[in-house]
Amino acid sequence: MSDQKHAIIIGGGFGGISAAKELRNSGIKVTIIDKNNHHLFQPLLYQVATAALSPGDIAVPIRAIFGKSSNVRVVLGEVTEINKQEKSLKLKDERTFDFDYLVVAAGAQYNYFGNDDWAESAPGLKSISDALQVRERILLSLEEAEQIDDPKLREPYLTYVIIGGGPTGVEMAGAIAEIAKRNMMRDYKNFSKNESRIFLVEAGPQILNGFPKSLAEKARESLEDMGVSVLLDTPVTEISDSRVQFKQGAIETPNIIWAAGVAASPLMSSLDEPQDRTGRVIVNKDLSISDYPDIFVIGDAAHLEEEDGNPLPGLAPVAMQEGRYVGKIIRNNTPSKDRKPFHYVDKGTMATIGRAKAVADVKGMKFSGFIAWILWSVIHIFYLIGFRNRIKVFVEWMWYYFSFKRGVRLITNRFSK
Image 1 (tube, rainbow, N blue to C red):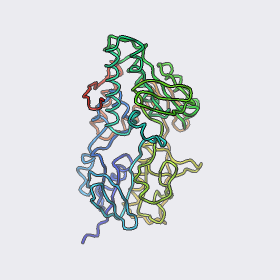
Image 2 (tube, helix red, strand yellow):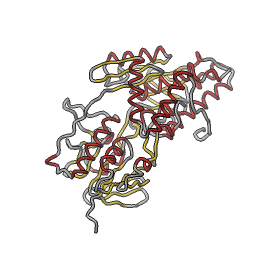
Image 3 (cartoon, rainbow, N blue to C red):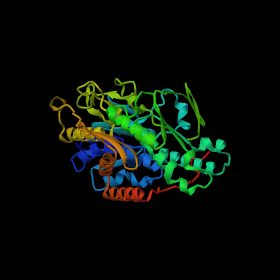
Image 4 (cartoon, rainbow, N blue to C red):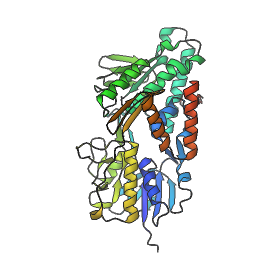
């Protein structure tokens, strides 16, 4: 009977992949379980949704990452239950796995704040499938508008509503504005770019909450210069098939995109641990859970407060640093009493707004415009896994920058109604 320790990692996102990389070619058996077979670079999903990049540019098979690591196994499956007492877990297909160490990096899903029926009319951007659905809706809407001669009747099809003023919402609004105001319009003859309307709807008083107010204001001004109407202090009260309702009125459109908040995976509840209001598990300073030093929760699924009392944000750099930290603990079999508390090194926050437009806050230094866009581009390309992906995305972006052309604009009817 082998005495080799077994570490299971749930989730092939930034946190899970980073933990597994620390453990590859070690003396520990590693199993990565994910319901998808690929690692996805989520920050660039909006580029797929707006036809700037193809899905293969921002995703890579998990098996390809660890193909040369003999101790790492990849299992395609969905974990539905964790038994922390017995150190076992169960998949949706009833398979069970035992573990010595467990790293839960199950990620997050969009939070519709109790209105889950809104998801069908207002999809979010958490998967390639989501991005393709949004892309298809945008393209189909343009085709519908092209067939209608009455400007009033085609107005809904040339209207876009993005709900949520965080980085994803801002990036999506800017990308759609570029499509609607410049890029694709030359291909359509029956309407003009001036008929397009883009709304970014935020329930709070500021977009990019968490960014310095000065940068958030610059982002708002840049969006409005691009033709985006930014609606602040405007909570959504109802969403139907082709309508967004607010207290102040409503907007008719089939093009509704949700980017207004996330909640932890429902799997977190099976750990039977204290959770915050979004479902994230409250973890110890070493990212383990109470009384179980060999079970760790990281990334979007973990609630860990910084020195100022605020929880760490659900960002890729946070998940990656947590993954490396936990991986080293497991690799070295570090006892809980000897573990140094996890400390996040904040390398800055940034968001892109459009072509050569972005905002960045790096160690107190604030950038906007072209310089911030260059920083954003370099950092995001650097985080892409695989040399081929980096080169391909760089070439695609340069082509887009100089030609103003978009990439894949195919309609397959996969998501059409």
